[in-house]
Length: 178
Image (cartoon, rainbow, N blue to C red):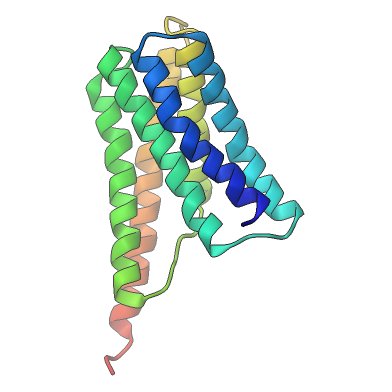
């Protein structure tokens, strides 16, 4: 297993520990775990590029780890009243639609077509930044601005992935059946 994949697995393992800490009302160490998780997101990509160890497993694990971390984080934030429930629903729905779209394309083509997009990466970055702000200073005046930027990027990213998915589906329709 590559170093990058080990780092990604660490992020997956840290997520439930972070969530439990947040639900138990702890402040310091869950925040530190979340920030460590964000840093592992940067570190795994850097390790894969520097060591030239990009793998299919890593291409699947990394976005799955991001989605698990962020969806559970915003679910807990909604449960704790730090964000309105509809914000969690938007974040969860975007990720669910993307995963369902990827799954459908894989079922139809038997090809893994997970291609990170600029808007998707920007959305993940903003979701993480907003979460860090909410953990460090939930009453900070910029929280609402960060949340609205996060929601706008999530919507734009979903539209971008939907457009790309429709393009892939149209390409499949153009190929005659065997």
